Amino acid sequence: MCCVVAACTETSEGFLDSKGKETDDLEAVFADSMKVMGFHAALFWQLGRVTMSPHGVASTLQNYKDYEAGTDNSRYCAYFKVTEFTPAYTKGDFSQGGTNAGFTDFKTGWLEMYQTIYRCNSFLQNYKKAPLTDATKEKLAYEARFIRAFFYFHLMRQYGGVVLVYDEVIDPFEPTLLPRSTFEECVNYVAQELRTVADALPLEQSGADYGRPTKAAALGVLTELYTLAASPLYNGGNIGSGDNRLLVGYDDYDKNRWQNVVTAARDLMNLGTHELMVDNTTRPGYGFYQATTKRVNSERVWFWLTVYTTCYPSSALLPKSAKGGGQIQPYHELVEAFPMIDGTPIDKESKAYKENPYKDRDPRLDYTVIYNGAKWVKKKQGEPEVVYTYKGAEQDGYGVSGGTATGYFFRKCCDESKLGGDSDYGDGTGLSFIRYADIMLLYAEALTELDVDRNRDEIEKQLFELRNRAGIQPGTNKRYGVPENMDKDEMIDFIINERRIEFANECGNRFWDLKRRKLYEKLNGVWTNAAVWEKMPDGTFTWSLMPIEQHFFSQKMYFSAIPQDEINASHGMIIQNPGW
Image 1 (tube, rainbow, N blue to C red):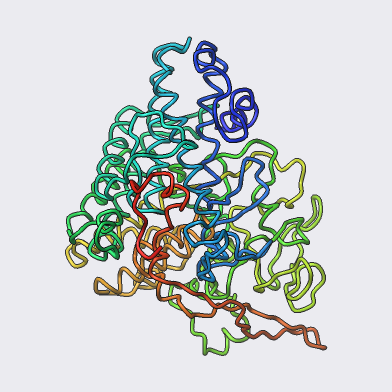
Image 2 (tube, rainbow, N blue to C red; image 1 turned 180 degrees about the horizontal axis):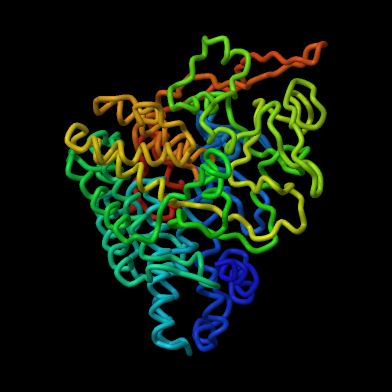
């Protein structure tokens, strides 16, 4: 897939202008095999950008603007201003642009996703003319249908029911005179598309094709789609009324919608092509580290690979002393969400925790964040050195220009042997949209919603396997700290927290979980904290919490506003989301 992404940044410039419109005659493009491949490569162009956030990473791979920076997990620190999506979500302020529905990043997300759908449909309308083998043409066509379905899915979780253009080639820069389809219509259409392409796509992609969609990728997105549809925001918790009610969810609750999740997840699991990365021999939880940093691994279901020789995301995430930008930084609340090494919750009042809150913790914590006293390679081919984030510490300290604003930095998805600015970084890590662990936890969540008592053994099997992989100690009861006999609500809370720590800073998982489970409103008015360490004259350290960000949330924020420009141009055909 590296060659595919490289192609979209190199060969696409001959036939796509800055707005994404074709400038060459499509007849000429589809008469040239190289231009056809370049056109197809461009379908992957926006994957990383829109999946990270509407202002995303862009093809230059310089920024890391994950949706989670608008949650209680982390803060976007590079240019914290309310005119960008995640700070606006933190503050609940979308007034930039004159009106809330005119917020720039709402328009950016909508337009860029429809640009790709337009390109997919252009390809599907013309691909049979291409001077390629029939097998190659059909393979590329199914990949285009997959990309189109994936972008529709992403539109749906941001806006609810959207405008389905099906196979029509409709220029996204022209007025849309089609209405939004209902949420149910969108689910049914995208699900059917994913089932169709799942039957046609290969089990595996290898060599230069590694990173292209597979059968498992289609089933993975289908599992995510069905989870969205079955979750409380859409299934029984519809916030709409009147004309927009069926655009943002179902009119009733149907428990059986969770069965769709179970079926899709089992179909993927039964393929036998994916499994957890497990290695507790090198050191506890090392398989978790490999799953988030190793370019080729058995856990990646659907992902986007960066080009070779890029140091992304290390250059964006690591501290200044490691030649990184520290663009997104964890709040202390995320650190608190990780359990102890035996899987039990932290005891914030214990003497041991107050003295060293990072000792004897879930190994995933050390693979996710850099805290005061953690180690990272800080010089070329050198041994790892201590990173100091205490107040006033040189380069990385709290309150220092370019230092930490929260007491922490992210290291998730970064090669621990490299610096952010290494020119010989090697293969880029890329972004995992769906890992096998994601499927396991969605499967467990769906089984819990269906019948926690009947499905308890299968639910706990997923949790035990994940916590074993994490390097958590099993204990004498072999339960890895998983409480016994949890009821439905307790089990759901446990699973959602497990998702929070397993997927922290990975393509907005916390953001989407808070939305679909209708948990975001619990953040309204809540302060999140920095861990401020101070160095004493005797060389020891003390720490305290400093409230640094108050979060605001209103119900309308469960859905992004349909861009006001689109509504105006549609002459009333497109209906706005609730509250906007």
